[in-house]
Length: 143
Image (cartoon, rainbow, N blue to C red; front, side, top):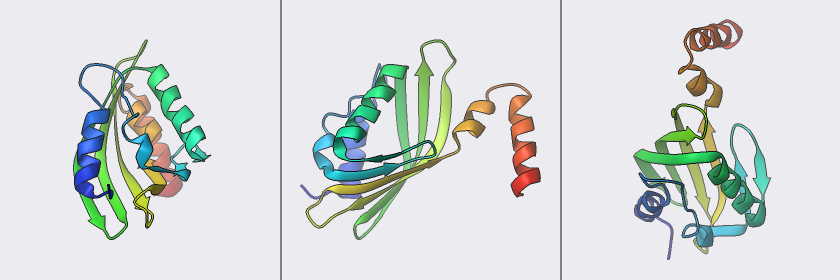
């Protein structure tokens, strides 16, 4: 099956449920053995390492939800905006806002996935005073 934005919407809606931990087993077949995954924290190369990373995230979270708010496709590139809410075992739920870029090869497999998000900003926003300090530092340094 060729990956399209409709397939991504269907697959990802089955991945993140409203009652419990995510299950990625049904999307792993759509990833190339040579997948390169990158986000704000890490760069992972190879499907085995990608699967391990997904399993670590599952183990850390009590519950994880994702809402895809916008999706588009241009040839072999699919980009979608999302809101991910992570419920950890000892901490309050934390919504993170981000986007994912998927690159699909000629055989229909995902060869690159790049997730973009401001993890610390979204986490600090839930901590009184810390969010304002974080934003002020960023504005002073980069704004």
